[in-house]
Image (cartoon, rainbow, N blue to C red; front, side, top):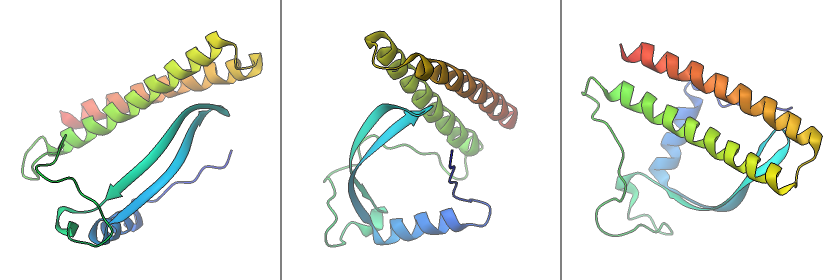
Length: 143
């Protein structure tokens, strides 16, 4: 399996995201999330990503009024790092649970082969183990 990862250590991911936020970007597309080679979730994406200061940029649409569903932690807050780590952990666990539900739904519907069921089971057990390790790491960092 070909894995592609964006490096954070050298700042390239941060620099890329900063440039996208500064100029703003509108994206429209589809994505399919697979686990063990089995398609489980389809996303139809219609996204605008921009910093608050980019609101006047032509071609970008923004909802008027206050931001809905704002998330964040104050940079000077002692729990800011813990809040971000907890948010990442929550997103990872949510995605793991969604994948598990979709895999079970496909299994019960009989739309996956016995080999795919085996691969999904192993992949889901591995994800659960990795999520548990991540949770332990986050708890240790909070202390």
